[in-house]
Image 1 (cartoon, rainbow, N blue to C red):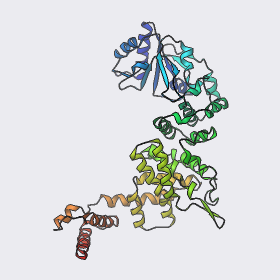
Image 2 (cartoon, helix red, strand yellow):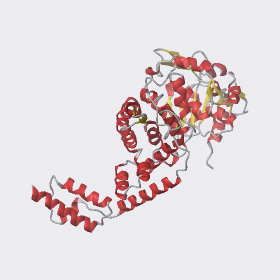
Image 3 (cartoon, rainbow, N blue to C red):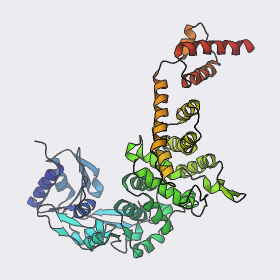
Length: 451
């Protein structure tokens, strides 16, 4: 019989007790249990045992991986479980996430161990064997009141906690206590690495019901400027109230992000998709102008690509993410516009061919629509998906390749790529392969005769 993670945790706890130690559930697992939420990620802290003793126990129940043995951190292969020894920390640098010396201290005591955590709601501990909960910092009360509050005066030493506060606010629907917000305002986020920033950003965008809270809290606590200046610039940028009754570009962007979160699980790449929703109108900070009393943002899709690239370059080297987001920013307006214009099949085929992910482009258009309009999108989406289905059908049919041209007696040359581009246009137009081949051969012969 395969044992569950909970059963394995209980075995670990019994063996720890037999060796003079004690094992506790800690952090989010305890918090979510109190809130009645399922959390499959189990965090365990073992007190009173050395690293060698802990490793010996873990090796007896599974494949022990020393994820950070020098820091007293272990995990079991195939298990959603992290096991750690209590630690103490001393700041050594400017306050960046890595500017700490960490010491394993198995005998630090429960209260001090809980005190090194970030928020009261995460400082809860539960004895695995008897279920007793230890709440040294009133975390249960803060859960009841839906408040995120720092545990100790050491909170500002790690600026990552600023972003974690915003992420938990978005994930849990809690408010950040004002005294904690005041400490956040004093933190220097520039000391953090891009990897830590984008890690928290991804978590907030993918795991929050209302990701907008993450950015609203960052803005409230003056934390957008260093990493997200392109987003900060959207606040106060006016829009035509006829088409955007919701308000400025910041408000529209936040509403669009929340709408996108409702169907991000349908997206091929949920994080990429959410980043596209976040950046879709980023170009309006440069493109918006008032002409004859009417507000326009002509070309914001083009300008948005440059600004989105600046933001992404600051955060990551992930080329696939950049390619996806920049493509979505460029094309985000076109699906709805083509439907409204009753455009030709050719226009839709060309659009979907340009898109890195047509399915996600439709979802982004849907989120953008609901970010400013309460009307039903069903008819628009139906037409877009019908057109996409036709595009997929055409792409599934046989088409002209270079080998087909060679078989027709055409010698390869630098103009082959031009000819294949012409053949692809015929494919998009729905021309069958036989006719497309004849036309492409004629096109290529014409080019060569002219030259």
